[in-house]
Length: 329
Image (tube, rainbow, N blue to C red; front, side, top):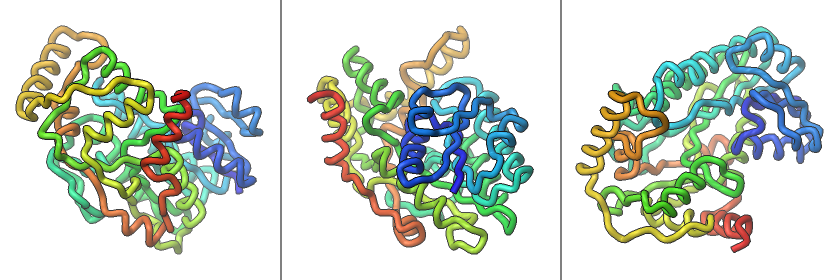
C-alpha cells in the first residue's frame, strides 16, 4: 500500500518508515525538512508544516493510510504552542485525510493522556482522562486523541497508540538528555526508588504501528480505540534509567534520593522563577517532571496483544545490548 508518515524523519517515525519500505510499501514522509536517507531508500520526501492543509493534501494523494507521528514534545513552554502543533495540527491532518479520501489513520498518542499525577499500576484502556493534566503536552495530546477517536467512522477508520517512553539507538531526545545531566552531576533520583515504570524499545513501538495500519478498517475491532504500547516489563524506574545511561556511555548515578515532596517544591519554585524572569530554556525541575519521576506508570497490554497481535520483538535486555553496540561498548 501507499502510506504517508508525518514526522517520518524522526526517531519513531524513521523506524516506521524503514519497516514499511522493507516490506515493499510505497512511503511518503511529511516533515518540516527533508532527510538524505529517505532518497537512498526510495522514500518520497514531502516538506511542510502540520498547519498547511494544501501541502498535506498534495502529499497524501493516492495514499491508502496515514500514520500521524509528528508532535511537539516536552514539558515546558507556552501552552499555545503545544495546542497549535498537537491539537490544531492533528485536526488539519484529519481534514486533509477527509479531503483526499484516506481510509485509515493511525495516531501516535501517549500514556500521559491519562496521567493525572498519581500512580498508574497496571491500568488498562478503561482508565479515564483526568479532569486536570499536569502539562500542556499531555493536555494537548489528550485533546488530539479525543478528536482522532471521534473521527472514526465508515469513511475513515482511526486508532490511537500510546507508546510509553520510547528509547533505543539513534534516540535524539531522551537518552542524550539523561546522559548529559548525569555527566554534569545534575540528575537526581526522585522519590523512594520503588516506583515501577514500563518503557518501550523503538522497534517494538514501530511494530505496533505496522500492526495497527494493517488491521485497521471501519469493520475492525481496533477502529475508534486507543491502545497502550510498552515492553510488558515494568521495572524500578531509577534502575531502568541508570542502565539506559550506562548502556549509552554515561556514568552511574549517585545512590541518594530526593523526597518527592521536596522535588515538587523545587519544581514549583523553578516554574515561578522561569516565568517571572522569562528565562530561556527549560527549568532544571518542574512539578510535572517530579511527579513523573516519583510515580509508577505501567500498563495492562492485554488489549494490544488480543486486538493488534502485539508482542514485543525486542526484550529490554536485547534493547540494552543494541544501545551498547551503537556506542561501541
